[in-house]
Image (tube, rainbow, N blue to C red; front, side, top):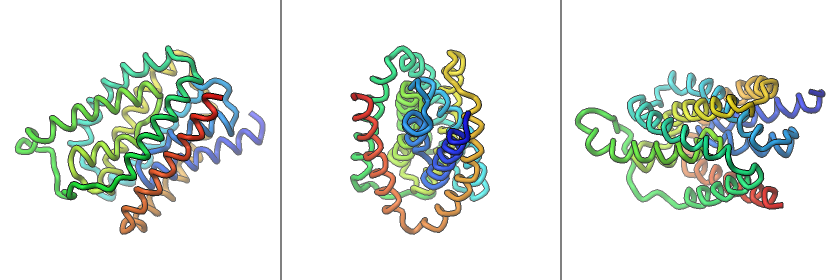
Length: 260
């Protein structure tokens, strides 16, 4: 790799870590387009596999900070993740069988749909004290398990950590506040990313040198993102809107480039 590619890889990693630390998802939304269009990875499948490894590792780094802050609801996170891993395993096999450019275009279209859905204001009240216990299992499990399975299927198919799907899915299933959903989502982002990454790595679709660069840049970005997230905790709706607009904008760009 030449110095320009090394610098681009580090910058891409910093952006991934920043987004993961700030909003708990969207790292792979940025990672795949950056690897394809900025860093210059020729194969969309290789970009997806490489991004999946880096996003999973950066999510683990971000998770450590959120765990110390007490924003991770572990029983909900583990339940969602187990269902998601099953879905991601099936989705990865389907995604690798599809043409790379067509896969990118579909990925972008899904991003636009999800981003527009996130712009809609929430109507259900928050429940900051929500817990998955024996008493609440009857109401929470029927929502958490199907949501995790569906998100995992999409995450595996598109080769992503799925954080931009996991955060709204957790909020819809449990009513937990955004800050808790961000921390909790990182457990699933790591689990789904590692599942998808393992599938792509076995097929030779991971560039390990770029993974190292993305992780190195991501560690710095994640620290900045977590600190910024604490300061912006009062601007919850602004964070949601900003994240949604980012998803729509990048998704539209990926659709145009994928179809072109």
